[in-house]
Image (cartoon, rainbow, N blue to C red; front, top):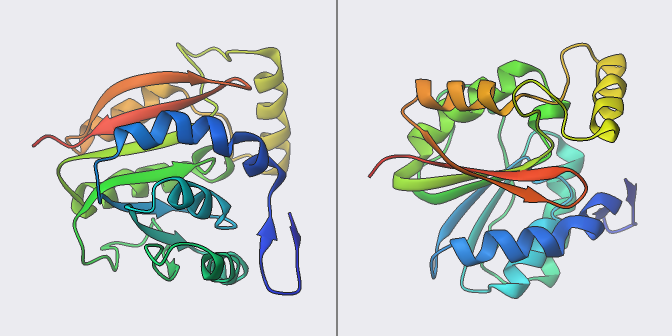
Length: 204
């Protein structure tokens, strides 16, 4: 990432993936939906999605102050439906979340964080979502224990060299965590660059 003087961060990956994510995600969100974004990063996804769907009520969160400041800087030029970014560490429970959300969106977090973060994500999601609420997770995954492309295997090695607790997760392991909190895996949507959007749902 690089930053401008006004605290905005610019993420090349978002520039590449924001349109394809929007094409898949936005049609699945109801009119006026309340969306909790976990690990919002720079805030560019939030701005892009809410520019395309200004009816959405978007609630960004981050753990790092630099990213919180970036989101709050980006939101100045976007719809007022983007709330101020709040601090959230998903491993600390209960989350300081008071509203019931229609959906949770997260991009590119669980492979660049310890496994405890994935555990915390689903534990918190169960309490934060309305009945019937959905979770959308974007990123790379193994399928049946295997990488879906050689580039993902190389990426996995790079992640583990950076931190042994990081790594591309097997979708079956993530599904098991979700199921332990009563959250069902609905579908796995292939995306460009060997990524997926994994869709989960809390029963009504």
